Image (tube, rainbow, N blue to C red; front, top):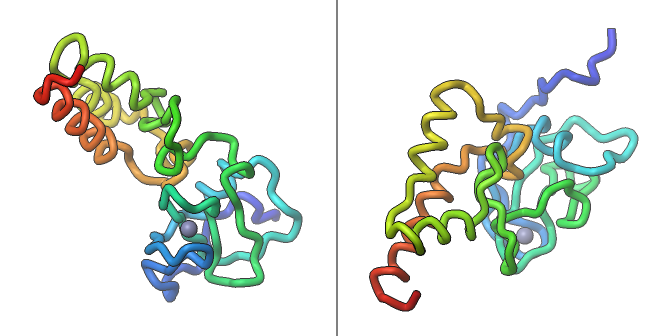
Amino acid sequence: MSDCCSVNVNSGSAPAVMACPANGARSKRVDALTVKSLVRKLPLGMPNTQYYFCDASDCELVYFALDTEAPRFRREDLVVRVGAKETADPIPICYCFGFTRQDIWDEIGSTRKSTVAERIKAEVEAGHCACEVKNPSGKCCLGDVTRAAKDGLRVVQGNTF
Ligand SMILES: [Zn+2]
């Protein structure tokens, strides 16, 4: 039987955080499933190793592995824009439901509040999210949504809109 769809990478002994080999940023573990889902073209013979996600905005490297021989993946290797690394719109924040930072800020600009986190939360509770195969971090986007909303609200309260 083929084990190509198995995600049983032995991550038990891999450190939870590794320094990005490109810029030294603290990078968290990411599931092999996330890497496989978001890298446009997987090289043949990928080793079964623990991958890490560098979310630093000044670094081109997205995924690197504990096994230093394993292929590394840069921004252009992914099928999606990595929001954490983008400085120009559209900056994706929620990959499951397609909210960008601009969507969040537009709502705040016109209504002075943000309902995006609430709406996503309802979808998550209904089991409709797929962060592990859509979000480059492999994690839920709610923290990023909340941060973007806070930034937007701060601007509104400063009346610079
Ligand atoms: Zn990096």
